[in-house]
Image (cartoon, rainbow, N blue to C red):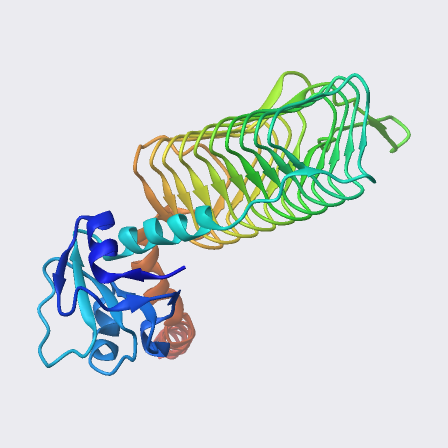
Length: 345
């Protein structure tokens, strides 16, 4: 699709600096710009690229003032990054959408399938399932018995949703993820063996949840594992049984959450964060990459780093000391030698 600067500025409510009739038909990084491409500048450290980019249009923040001539047409907006994301959504929504049911798909007679759906090859939809209007189930998706999908959901290739799970409206689950597999429940026995504890609950994804590729969300032992509305999970995340993740929380790849932990609203986790089981994390917590959380985070909007995670400012100060430990150790040894010599005298 092709848009001119005037159309884009009108959609974004932006101000044009340059040619309003210049047209673009693709997007590109500002450092890789070429004629016909649209780019954006949000991070000041990339500013030098705007003076040499080949892109025809660049989105910039409204307070941006160039320090040299710019060849591209600029569109000034309140937030260039958010505006660029809005344009990407517009382009994505304009793509033609697949519809229809492939002949190789198996849909049990007791299942209910809504209107305008796409069900690809070798999909299985189990007994008493509900697939809402406008859903897309790509090839090799498995939907277990009694599962309910709201409207506008997308299950990408190879997604497995076990029985009795509930997925809300406009949810997306990316390739290879498993929703509702058994939680890790085993009771130790007197003979040092372990007895499996049946996992009789389910998983609930509320509206507008997005799950990355190869994520596993375990079903509850009893009750539900709940992912609240607006949550975004990156690839390769493990969510244990009976976990609850609060609204609009986001987690980066390889995060692991042990069973029965409750995560608050509007939290942000970096990659490889680990949470112990049966703890609570307060609303708004920011947890840095590779941090470990062994106990409750009680203070809202905490910013934590390290293991066990502490306030990020304390962690940064501690890391300076940690780097100096070899030097400090040598000094302690020298002082001990001096003390011994003084005692001999």
